[in-house]
Length: 219
Image (cartoon, rainbow, N blue to C red; front, side, top):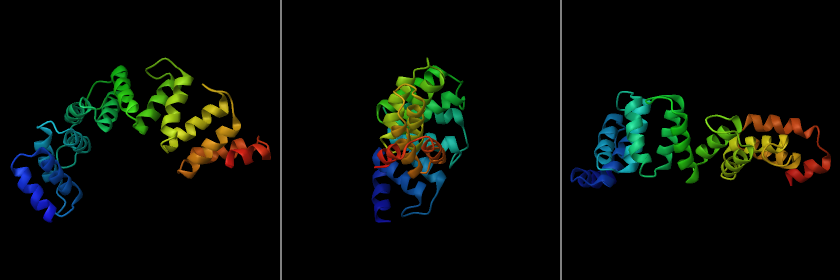
């Protein structure tokens, strides 16, 4: 409550950081009663001053119809402003909007551009999606080695879908040398992170591996 009081004083004086923080308190219901409309109001004031975090959060609210009417085009507008400032989550979400044609016309090239910018900043979701694009020949020329590169980056951050997809590339020798030990290892790690596909694929590949290979994969 004390933090809210100070944030409010600064926010009412036009400080964007305080406006964002006050919006965040209303968003979460911390120190105040949860109020989505009030959260959106303060986010907007900060967003209009160019505060990227607030622009992204306001985009989320429009995307989900939370505190404001659901409006895909308005979500795209605010995501774009944050994305152009290098905000990785906004870049990824903007990629999704162009990919799925929600709030914007479907534009595979634009989706790919924003996914790549987020992926290059280390955003695991975007790295995985970019890997999938290269693997599936979706909006970009098929390139299994490039798919492996992006899957690996996502996998090394603990992203389960990236781990299981990397395992699949090793199992089939796509974009890399076929290696059942590494395939099993990544499937097993994905399984530990909650991937059903990872667990099923690990159990399946284990049936054609020697005991020594399984031991090497799980050491």
